[in-house]
Image (cartoon, rainbow, N blue to C red; front, side, top):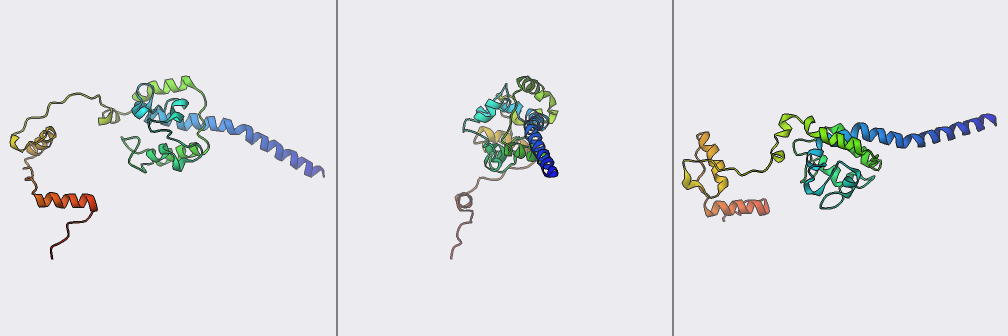
Length: 209
C-alpha cells in the first residue's frame, strides 16, 4: 500500500514538473531556434523597416495579424499555414526568395507552429535582431535583385535597332549581340497559333488528315 501511494505521489510530481517545464521549453525553443531564424532570413523584407505585402515578422502582433491577404499561420496546423507552405516551397510563393531554408530549419518552424506558435514577449530582443539582420546576410544575399532599391535604367544601345519592339528588347538584343548571336526571326501566324495551343491546352495543333 505504501509503495502504491509513493508511486502515485511520484507520478503526480513528475506530471507537475512536466507541466511547469512546458512553457519554459517553448520559450527556449523560440529564442534559440525560431527568433534567430526569422531575424536572419525574414526581417530584411518583413521587419521593422520594411513590410512587404503588409507582413511584419518581427513582432508577435505582426506575425499573427498576417499579410494583406490575411493570416499566414494557423496555430497547431502547420500543413494548412501559408507561412509553412511558403518556406517549404510548396506553392507559387517561395520564401525566402534567395534560396530555400535548410530542411532542419523548416522542420523547426513546423514544430513551432504545431505547438501553437508560442511567441514570448521580448521587444528588446526583436529590435536587436532586426538591427543585426542586414549585417548577418552575406554580400550575395544583399545583392539579390529583390533587395535592391528601384531606380530608372536606360536601355542599352544596340546595332540592330529595327528588331526592337519594346524597351525590354534592348536588354535581350544587347546580350545576344554581346555573344555574337543573331536573334530569331519573328514567328509566323502558324507558329504563334501553335504556341498559344500549347499554352492553353498543353497539346500541339491537331494534325491535318
